[in-house]
Length: 331
Image 1 (cartoon, rainbow, N blue to C red):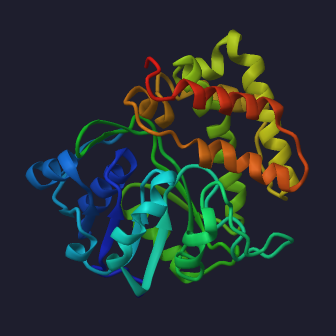
Image 2 (image 1 turned 120 degrees about the vertical axis):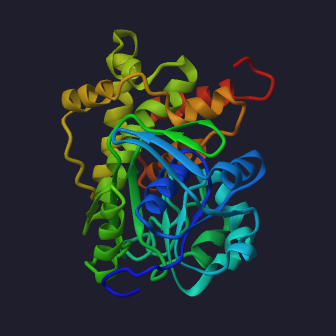
C-alpha cells in the first residue's frame, strides 16, 4: 500500500450496524469494498447496496457482497466487524481473504485477543482466554499483520443491509507495539477521506480502556434494566451502580498502566448526552442473540484476576445480564 492509498482491495467481515456503517462510508468515498455477509443481509446488499443514515445525511453505495471469503478473494485491508464471540468461528470463512500482506483492523467491542501482543510487559504474548480460548486468534491474527482500533460509534441496524448512526463517527487506531508507522497514518487518512474522524495513537490501549469502561458501565446494565444510554447515565436509580462500575473499571485500567483521562461527572454527562440510544448488547438481547459478555465483562474480570483485583459489582452485573439473556427468558 503506497502513501496515496490507491484502489486497494478493502474487505469487511460482518455486515451488522458497524460493518454497514463502515462499508457505506468507504464505498461512498469511491473505494471498492467487499463485504462478507449472509442470509437476508446478503440478499439486501446484492439488491439494494449498503445504506446508512448518519449525522451527515443519507448514504447508499454498491458493494461486492458474498457469503464466501473465497469469492471475495484476498484483500489488502480487512476490517473485522463481527461480534467478538463470533470471530473464532469466522476464521475459516475469512481465511481466503487473508494474504501475506493483508492488514487486519479489528473493529470489535471489549478486550481484544491482541491485548498482550506486541506491548511487552509481564504478560507479553499471553492470550486472553475469555475472548480467545486456546490462542487461535493470536496464532493467526497477530502483529505485524494487524493494527489496533477502537471505534467510538453508536449505530443500529433497523433492517438488513441498513445502518443508522445518530452521533459523530470517531475511531482511534494504533500499532499494538505503540510505535508510529506510515501504514497507521495512511489508514487514518483513508478513514478521514470517508468522513470518519480518525486519530492515530501511540498508546492505543488508553483509548481501548476508555471504550471498555463505557461498555462496562452501560452494556450489561442496559440488558438488566432495558435502559437507553441517556437513562443509564442520568437515572438517579442507577447512579450508584454506574459509579461503582466506573470506579472498578478505572482501577483495572490504572493497574495496567493505561492513562484514562476522564472525570466521573463529565463522563456521566457525556454518556447521557448520547440520547435515547440502545446499546448493542441491549439490541442483541431484545433479538434473542448471544451477548458480548465474554469480551466486555469476563475478559475485564480475567485481567483483574491476573493482578488479584476484586471487581464485586462488575461480577454481579455481568452475572445478572447473563441470567437475563438465558434462552426462554422474556425479552
